[in-house]
Every structure is written in C-alpha cells, then in structure tokens.
Length: 202
Ligand SMILES: C[S@@+](CC[C@H](N)C(=O)[O-])C[C@H]1O[C@@H](n2cnc3c(N)ncnc32)[C@H](O)[C@@H]1O
Image (tube, rainbow, N blue to C red):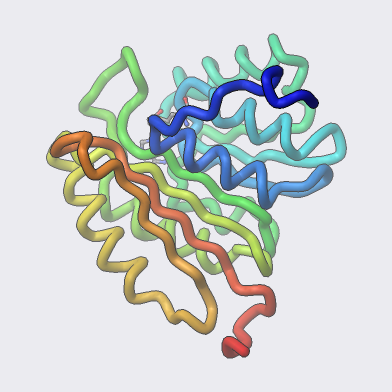
C-alpha cells in the first residue's frame, strides 16, 4: 500500500495500545477471552482477529453488558464464534481451556450505566491469577485500568505490585501510561508468557 493511503498513526489511548498488542499475538483459529464485556467493542475486535474458526469466551456480571455485546456482535455477523457468560470473571477457570492465546480485561464500570457496579481488586486479583495460569506460550494478558476513581486506583496499585513480582523466567511484564495525561489517566498492563511454558530464560 502507498504510504499516503495508510491511516495516520495516533498514540492516544490505553485501550488502543492493548488492541495493538492483541493484533500481534492473535492468529485465525485462536481461542481468546474477554473478561469484561461491557459494550462489546473489545469483543468485536477479538472476534474479528480469531476469524470464523476461532473462539471468544466472554464474561460480565451484568445482563445489560452481555445484551449490548450480543447485539453488537450480531450486527457484525460475529456472534457464532463467541460464547458469552453472565458471570464474574473470577470463575473463568471453569470455562476456558488450559491454554489461551489472549485474555483481556478493561476494568471499571459499564459506560452510561450504574457506576456503583464496577470491578474490584478482590475479584480482579482472582481472575488475573487464573488468566496468568491459562496463558499459552507467547500468549498475552492485557489489563486496562482507570485509576481516576477509588476502586480503580486500588486496582492500579495492587496490580502493579502483583505483576512486578512475576518471575521473569516465565513472564515478560510491561506497564504503559501517558506521562503527561494527568492523574487518573487510563493505563495499560501487558503480560506475555515466555516461549516455553515454565522453562528458565535462555
Ligand atoms: C469498562 S467496561 C468494559 C468495556 C468493554 N471491554 C468494551 O469494549 O466496551 C467494564 C465492565 O466490567 C464489568 N464487570 C465488573 N465486575 C466484573 C466481574 N467481576 N466480572 C466480569 N465483569 C465485570 C462491568 O459490568 C462492565 O461492563
């Protein structure tokens, strides 16, 4: 493609950084997990990346979020490759295969809905630990956090602590944030399992 025909590259959002990483690790036919369905924007991106032979397993505690996601997927003709659960992501281990290529969290509340129904560290921690355990070799976990509210700030701090303590022989951990965006700006964490499961780094 000619250079002038390409979309301009704009670096502006934690969610965009996460989506760029998904596109690098997901291949047609993969199984991936959306741990926070919300409006279904991320689910649609994931469903596009896994293709017709792939599978997206999604979770949200709110019926409204699952309904919004189902509608978005259906309009895009992507519903058949997705399995949606009205369930806390804490229980994902009971529904996902032993090895998953990509697991994504976009924490917080459902936009335009009840802000008191938000993610909380206790359940986020359980779910993130399950996600880490289920990553395939070179599989990727991304977590977008919103520290502009109290529960989000707690998630950010605790997640930072947890992910920074992961063994470097098993995982590579990245933390991305916009340094001049002010306090409370969204941040993105990414964890990739090393090429060989549980093997020490060469
Ligand atoms: C910021 S929204 C997700 C946005 C979504 N990924 C999108 O593309 O539109 C966060 C979602 O997390 C959900 N949520 C909160 N606690 C949860 C839990 N324990 N398990 C699963 N989902 C949860 C909320 O209901 C809300 O829909």
